[in-house]
Image 1 (cartoon, rainbow, N blue to C red):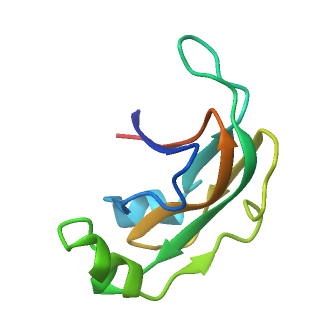
Image 2 (cartoon, one colour):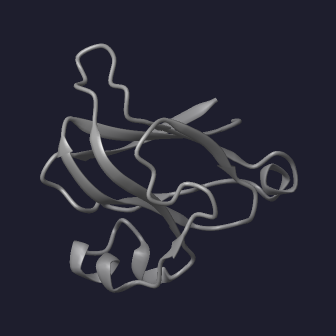
Length: 118
């Protein structure tokens, strides 16, 4: 399984986008897991704040573009991982090309592990 992490630390409001490179078979199956974690663990300090996972198919959202271009892309809020303030698990079961985290974290770090089968 390939796992990528988006991390939003205190004082940050948006992460750079992440490409979701997934096969058609994956999208036709169970999709991609999204595990949002506020509870810290290991060296990470628990996150406090409100965070939303966003998805996009806009080419401007490509992580190879500048942050200003990514910010200008069209983004949609995930159906479930919106305004979360505690750990939450969900998935993306529809094809989309990019994801990012937005929100306000007052302390610690919030992460979202994005995983899909190889």
